[in-house]
Picture 1: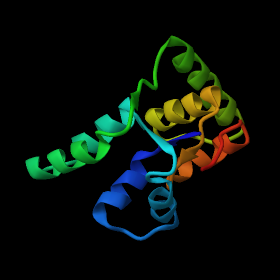
Picture 2 (picture 1 turned 45 degrees about the vertical axis):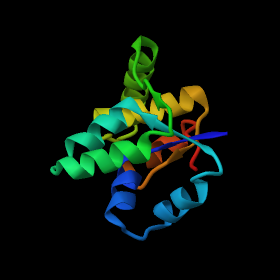
Picture 3 (picture 1 turned 90 degrees about the vertical axis):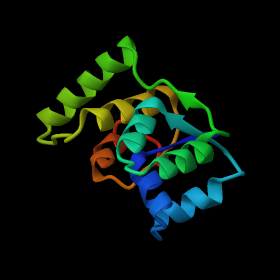
Picture 4 (picture 1 turned 60 degrees about the vertical axis):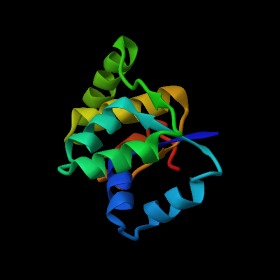
Length: 129
């Protein structure tokens, strides 16, 4: 089985923070195929200020496949989910999080996350890792 790891978990991992999600990520390393989403990769690399750290992160990600999270079908379904949640009074703060959750739901891939914006998607079929 594969698991997609969200930006929030990777950031805590690289900073050396001890969280339940980082502990779970460490347990998954070498045991399961981890996926890097292209949008997640962009978010992480954009936030790095030091060239050495960029090389360190890219090296750490090298063994894992990078998957494309957005296409027309995902974009349309993501918008449907967003509108559905908004009608329930729930506003997802980031479009990227909506796209990530939608990709995981459509592809039935568990998501390891530490971001509260993903919680409403569990009722829509998001599998928590």
